[in-house]
Image (cartoon, rainbow, N blue to C red; front, top):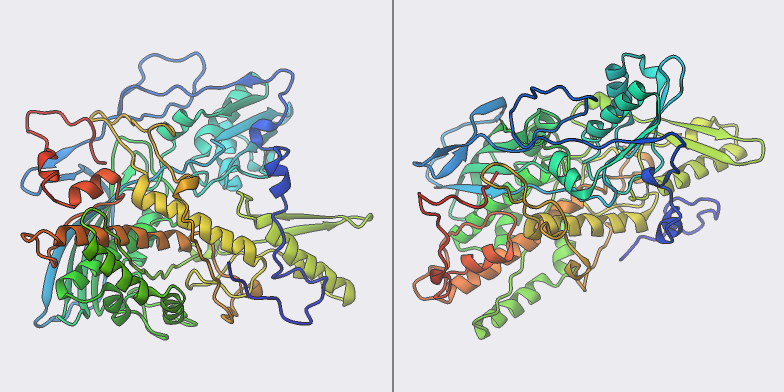
Length: 611
């Protein structure tokens, strides 16, 4: 890892920018950190379990003794369109349009295509957990919850119990991971637990088993894209039209905002003169899909890089050359009319090409592929432009409360949740400087406030509160993206039952999946005047960078296909995400793959269906 050193002469009391260790690291490593289910049991505590239905879209005729929350988690409503060979879902919740200039495009190459991106399970180490403790007067209740969203947890519990929100106290000290999966779906558990505690008058606890958590809480939205791209023989993109379909599940949840973000990222880093995007949310009788790191952005950008790679192949040009030719420049307007200011993309791109010795590596790979018949290598570089913050602008605010006690200790309360990303550590660094400065000059305590990150930009970072934790976030996000694009595949039965309900059937990246040579550098001398201490978002943008692995794999497959005389090197082939080993092998197309029957006869029931 390469960091930018703190400026010479920076005071020793100024902790901003210094690589301090994660405040909870030692406690987490030795098992002393207290998570929700580690809280000692109350004397009269009850345990709650959720009852799941074996049928989807069904009515419960028998009244249960205690009304528990039931998640319906089975059959998907299917309509197979034989002429298209793809699936369509009956119910469409909402359609969103982005429409820009539709001028006459003149003579160009038009290339249609279709691309599917599978869903992803959050697989946080700590599953959903809630402890509800009724206080015995005026409907007051204390909730200890593993959630990213204390406000919704409080509001939902208050509404169900019929009490004002100020009677519900929600406590969150730390989460054992969240990744967006505990933004709204934690209320499935917390609301049921609160109701049980209210009815019984006793403390109630519920922590889901892994299979229960995977079955009912949803994950990243699967996407299907149908696109048409118009481009010149030089590789210059002149027009784009993409229809996006997402599997929303059985409720709206955050699917609308996720589709919005997918549409905002359908250009990734490329200036497209004529662009049209549509988004359709497909209602299905599966658990509602929800927020996941990237929030629709990775799906929109992966689709963009899919058609961009096909343009490069069709034109017979290096993919990195075509990508560079179409990139935005400083001051350009996006398709949603945002002016790009402080746009460091080309600088990041050039530095990455140089530091990775990209062209030398590419020559080595070409040589290796010519000399080896059954082993192939691939290489790819992919840019990222990620729009952070909420699309509803009034949500982009934050506050904090600092108590300075007479013994000199300080209590900092802020609106963020510590999920392992080191937020508490960064906030302590920021507030400590503010308090230190306040002790020297007559300044108000609000200078020690916490602040959300407010900036658009690339994954490489300027000086900020904690560069070492930021670099670790890049590594973690990249590896999670590796899982999304190459390993993690959700399998459903024809009746909609989830087969992959645990680590034995659902494979996430392990230690062996992490690259041995893994270099992360943070962009130097890149100020951001719009945020505290030049802060930029670090949690979500790096995830999509792992798509470079997906397209490097596709590059290697193309090399394998090209060695057969009956295959054209410019021939396009389909490889959906994730690029699992069996998909990779079958895509290579040789004498062995012809022995493998991949089609399903009409009279045969498939064991697994794509959702």
